[in-house]
Amino acid sequence: MKFGSFPAYIGGRDVAGDDPQFVYTVAARPIIEDTFAQLRRKQDLDRGVADPAAAGDGVVGACVVADAAMVHRALESAAAAAPQWRSVPVADRLEVGRRIAKRIGEHRDPLVEILVAEGTPRSMAEPMIGGLPYTSWSPETLEWCAEQLEVRRWDGEREMILRRVPDGVVCVNPPQNAATVNALNALTALISGNTVVVRAPRGVGLSCMYAMREIVAPVLAEMGAPPGTLNAFCGPPMLEDWLASPHVDDVLYYGGSKKGLEFERAAVTAGKKPILELAGNDCCVVWRDADLDAAVQSVTQFFMNSGQICNVPNQVIAHPAIADELLARLVAATRRIRPGYPDEPGVVLTPVLGVDWFYGCLNEALAKGATLVHGGRRLEVDGTPSGTGFFVEPTIVRLDGLAGARSLSVVRDETFFPLLPIIVPAARDDTALCNEVLEFVNSNAYGLRNSVWTTGAQTIEAFLRGVTNGGTLKINDSHSGFLPFLPNQGGPGLTGGVFGEASHPMLRTTRLQAVSVLRPEGVTP
Image (cartoon, rainbow, N blue to C red; front, top):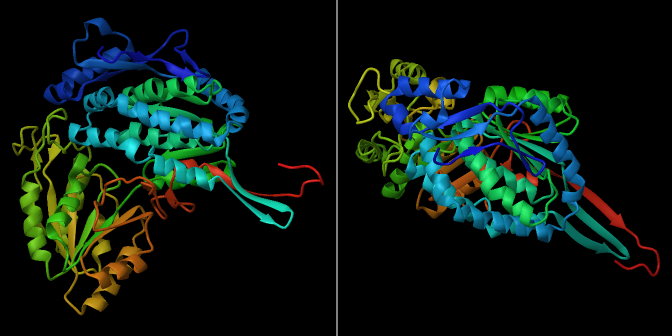
C-alpha cells in the first residue's frame, strides 16, 4: 500500500486494538474504470476475507476502524489533557499554529496524492491543501483571533479583563465531501486552548488520518503538548456517543440542513454547544456594469466537484441588460468543462450519485417555465453521452422573473449536482431593481456566501450596505475563494442554525468571560 495504514491516535499513542478491523482506500481511477469489480475487492478487504498484499496497486492505504472502547478512551484522554493544555501561554499555542502551517506545506504533495486517490480532482486538491497555510492557518488569521482572546483595560485602580476562555473538549465530525480540509480548519480550535477529538469518515479516512498523524501530531509532540491534546480515529458516525459523554463540550457538525438542525436541538438539550457547518445555497448577482469575463470565471466555480460542495454560487441573478450576453459566455465556458479521471489535469467534474434528484429538479424547473440553455445529459468518463454514465453534463437553465423563483427546488433548496439556475428579473428602473434583488438575496433561507459583480461605485455601496444575509460577502472577488483573516465558513439560517455566524473555529470554540481585579496594596501583577 503506497501510503501505509494508520491506527487510531489516542492519548499521544497509536492504538490498533486487539483484533483490528481495517477500512481500505481503493484509488478512484480503477473504481471508475471497473466499478463493480473494484468495489467488490474493497468489500472483501474491509471484511478481512482478502489478502491486502495481493490486492494490487489500486489499494493505496488503510485505516483501523475505531471500536467503542477507543472512542471512549479518546474522550477521556482529551478531557484529561484539557486543564494542562489551556494553561499553556497563547504565544506558545500560536507557535504550534505556525509550525502546523509550515508542516502542511511540507506535506502538500503526498496529501494531494491521497486526496486524488480518494476521488478529489487534482485541480481542486492542490489549491485546497496549498491554500490552508494562506487561509485558516495564516499568520493574519491566527494572530487576529489570538488578539480577541484577551483585552485589558483600567478603571482607576481596577484592572478589567475581557477574555475568551476555551470551551474544553471539542469533537469534530468533518463531511465526507471535504473531510481533510475541514478537519484541518477545525483544528485551529487547538490554538485557543481546546483539546480536540476528530472522527475521520470511513469513506475518506486515509487523507484525514494522514493529516492528523503526520502533520498535526508531530508538531504537538515537539512542542510538549500533553498527550490527549489531539485524538483522531476513523469510524462510523458517533454523535449520540458524544452527546451522552460528560467529557464533551462542543461538537463541530458538518452536513445537510435537516439533520444538522435536528442535531442542534439534541445538542442543546444535552448541554453541548453545537457549531454547525451545514448547507449552502449561495446567490451571485451580476449587474449591468459587471466585468463579465471575471464574473463568468467566478460563476463557473459552481461546477467544481460537479456542484457537490457548499461554498459555490448555486444561483445567479443576472441584470436583464446583460443576461443574454452573460448566458452566451457561460455556455461557451461550460462547454470546456469535461469529465475525466481525478488525476488528470484540468478535470473538475466528479461522479454524481444523486442523478434521479438532478432530473427531478431539472424536469420540475422546465415544467414551470424554465428554459434549458445547456447540458442535461449523463456522460461517460470520456465525455460520451450515455444513459448510464456516472457523470452529469454541466447544465444551465434560465428563469425569467424573481417572483415565484423560489417555488422551484433548484432555487429554493441546496442542490448537490451541476444544475445552475440563471434568474433574470424583469427590466425596470435600476434603483427599484436593486432593492428587489437585495430583498431576494436577503430572504434566502440559507446564509453561507453571496457575491456581487459590479463596477459602479453607487451599486457597490448599495450591495455593501444592503446585503445582510450570509457569513461572507464577496464584491468583484472569487465567490468560492478563501482568504486570510476572513472566515471561510459559517453563516446563519439553514447554513449555521440559530447560532450561526461567520466562523473562525478558534473563536467559536470559546466563551466570553469578564474579569475585574482590585489588587491589595503593594501587590503588583
